[in-house]
Amino acid sequence: MIKVWILLAWLGFSTTLLAEPLEVTNPWVREAPPSANNLAGYVELTNTSDEAITVEAVSSPLFSSVELHVTSFEDGMMRMTELKQLHLAPNESIKFEPAGKHFMLIKPNRAITSGLEIPIILQIKNAAPQTVHFKVRK
Amino acid sequence: MKKIIPIIFVAIGLAILATTFIPPAEPPEPAIPEDLKGVFIDSPAVRLPDFELVDHNNRIFNNASLKGQWSLVFFGFTNCPDVCPTSMTELNKVSAMPDTPEDTQYVFISVDPKRDSSEKLKEFVTFFNDKFIGVSGQKSEIDKFKEPLGVIYGFEGDTTSEDYVVTHFAAIYLIAPDGKQRAYALAPHSAIQISRAYQLVRKHYD
Ligand SMILES: [Cu+2]
Image (tube, rainbow over the protein chains, first blue to last red):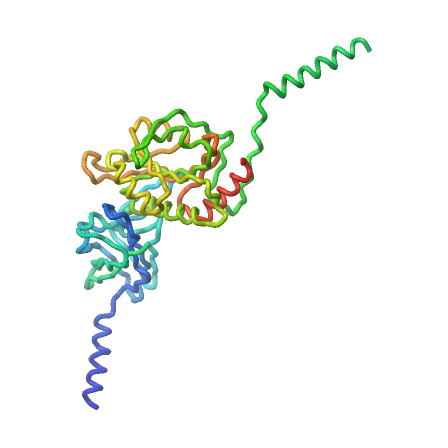
């Protein structure tokens, strides 16, 4: 019986330790033609903590680089701009979606096929990095 | 009375002349419902100059290729990861809608011929739909085509490398079977927006 309590206590402790600072909703990458050099990833990130979170850099072992971009339209002219950092105030949500903010995945080092889960590492200021798995789909 | 008869003849003659030689006036343009955002009618219709481009099967694509059916034309580049695939996906949804007329041509024109070879274009457009047509060609010919449509594009970064970005005017153009552009829809695109614009314009001018 004591063993069970220890186990439960340990589980509770480890989940708080492992609790990720950002809540992640629907991470996905748009499937692209096989020779595509750039792909785009989308997700909704929510800061469920009481403190502001700053994402300082993003990367993936499957791409030579990853950048945070925002697409903007000025009088119909489409332009992508890099976001150097991402700030989320407590309880703030930021949505990455088609024709808006996106994870720009540059130069894949393997075939990116439908159903593949792409790990993307978020480097968070003053905290451990968080890995998010983006599923490739249409 | 003697004077009136010649006047009547003159009047009849003028009426005949008018119907024979004066072209019929353009029909009034269709009204765009207020909730249909980003859609604009060209008044008068935009006439395209002679141009000669190449499609993804290395066949000539020119003014004649736009005649005889309605075309939905989008300008972009295949290295575009966000907006172009989004618009192409929406165009594919439009093509699958039951009320979209079968006799519709979907054309993707690359403004980045340096990187977009016909193989690359073929892979890109057919990824979204087997029937889509990818077109590119010499910059001067692309510019001839895009100029009257008001398409603007530019390159950012080192264009001698493979890693530059194209900024471009992201619109879908509705070109009538007479080869004239009748309307356009600005990005960001949705299938419903494009479909409504197409139905409206097509019903009005067909
Ligand atoms: Cu981007």
